[in-house]
Length: 419
Image (cartoon, rainbow, N blue to C red; front, side, top):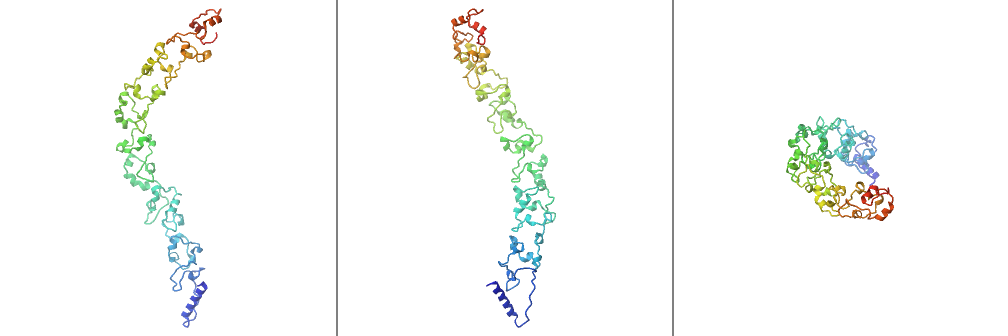
């Protein structure tokens, strides 16, 4: 049925009902004021009070779309007066302002039509304050922090953002006794907003960073009876028993320092490393891989000698190329050898006796025996192995003081050059 036919039918029914009993009824003025909507959009033919909007009626055309809770509300809940044109669109016209005007009249800044307690917008708005919500604070009831002076009221302006404003009861009852210890009431120095139980104090601020195994200890393992002020940072105050019980080596007998950090790390007692450089004997090359007991065989560390021969006498005596004993080579191994390997020894012949690694003799010989023809006797040497006696006599004819012995050659040619 078209709208025109439906309207005509309604008029016919009214006419029949009143025919013959009274004169025609005059048109009634609409109580809704200047409302440009046909009656049939909301009213039913059987009763004016049976309100049911039809698809032809669109509340959004009035400038106020019905969404969420507004779509479920009864018309009379908002339209107290039948004059719809005078209905206010302000939230406070229908909703009591529990915030007492502190946050303005725009409820939509925090609330949505879907639900008055839709927290999404509230959290976003809270991020613009000096106290953004995170962790457990996101789940807290607004009234837990913003409780007003009167029942049902919420207070926002002037609310403190300090931890103790809400958590002073926990602070006063905490173990260890926070007040006695003198802990700050700024909970964030130790606690997070995610898990209150997993407190973490920035121990580096106390001058003793917690690293390695120290990081896994509970506070009372070092701070017995939860005494924090005046605590010592000396290793031996916690590790005296470890120091006394150590036998490899015996720390007390060896006179090792009680400063554990001089040799040990905080992760494990194993892998201790003593800074041997502080003793005047740096561990390099093969020395760096030795165990302490290989040099300190008696278990004594104080007063030890750094002379090579004290550890390498057997190496010195057993050497045959050349025989160090027969040749009278000094027992100071570093004069010729490095610490990496015995091979590649190099005697500083140039600075001590005669330049064979530089000058005119450089590269003119292959082995020590080219000049030192008497085995294991380096005090004796010869020049005629390379320079024939006949040729030398010819070159030195008429030279005063010329002699044919090697010592005569060295006296006039100490650097191996022509005079």
